[in-house]
Structure formats: C-alpha cells, structure tokens
Image 1: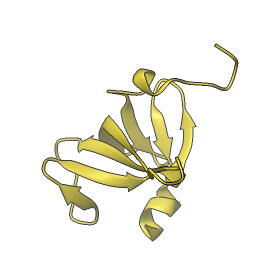
Image 2: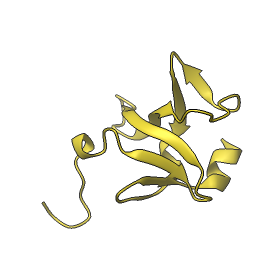
Image 3: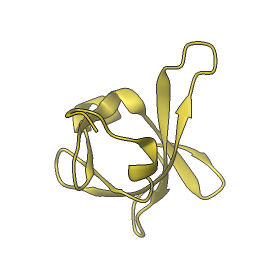
Image 4: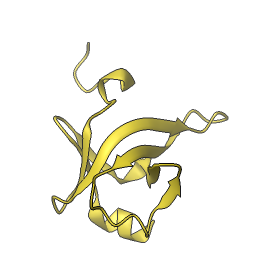
Length: 86
C-alpha cells in the first residue's frame, strides 16, 4: 500500500478522540454522499459517560462531521473547534 493511503476496513473499531484528548467513542461506520463520493460523517458508538446531547444521534450512535478529522493513526483525532461549530 502506498504511503498516505488507508483502507476503510482498517478504520473500523478505531478509538475516536478529540484534539483535547476527550474520548468520544469507537468508529462504527462512515457515511458517503452517493452523488459526489465525498465522505461526510463518522458514525461513532459513543464512549460510556460521554454527554451526547450536543450531537446528532440515531439509535445508539452519534454522527460527527468527517471534515473534523485531523489525523488517523492508532486513533482517529477530531478537531475540537470544528466539533463545537458543527
């Protein structure tokens, strides 16, 4: 695999945190716009104890904007400021 590429299957079940170190949960899925192919949302199983009242929710999951992703390594890091604006 070329440097800079990551397969979606390798992201499943990765821990998701914000840039302030707050644990948000575990990645369950990714939403893509079928017309453009652009990734739009991360579907997260929230961490226990996380206040989910400020997030869009469906079933047991919260939806976070894909464009908040800052980095993907051992964990997925989301920009805290971007999350506050979403």
